[in-house]
Length: 172
Image 1 (cartoon, rainbow, N blue to C red):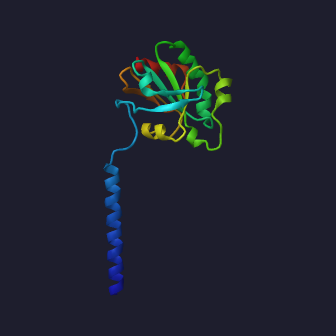
Image 2 (cartoon, rainbow, N blue to C red):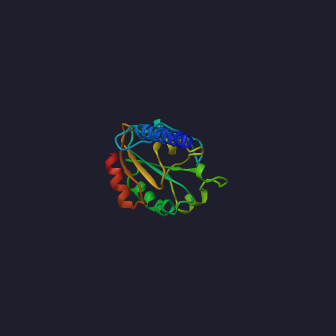
Image 3 (cartoon, rainbow, N blue to C red):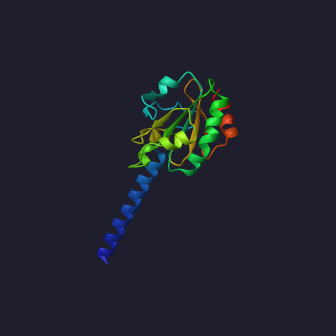
């Protein structure tokens, strides 16, 4: 009887402790940028060569498209994104960030980019740091960033040319 009482008390203590830890984690800020936040800085290798940093893109409206070559909706939206980029050329810069870290053993999506005649930079997130900083979990995700570097809009599903143009208008 006494052993049962001690075990019950220990189980209760463990349950209270687990609840306390869970509540503490829920109060902790979530990682990731949201609309209204300053876009987290990054420097990534461009698939086309060289490196690109967010600071080199600031001062212009920007569309950041997070994608992966294994992602069906990502591949399907590339032609629409390129069409929107062509319409807004010189007004809104478009940059794709390929989540290369999620594709172990695979080469960058060179063939996919060539096949869809993509003319905007494709940056390689080799370690997943940028995806983590931006809170990207599901793909595709496209963020509109204004000239001041603030995220002003997002699209969290496969986009059409019109959806991208609408998002670009928010960045202008």
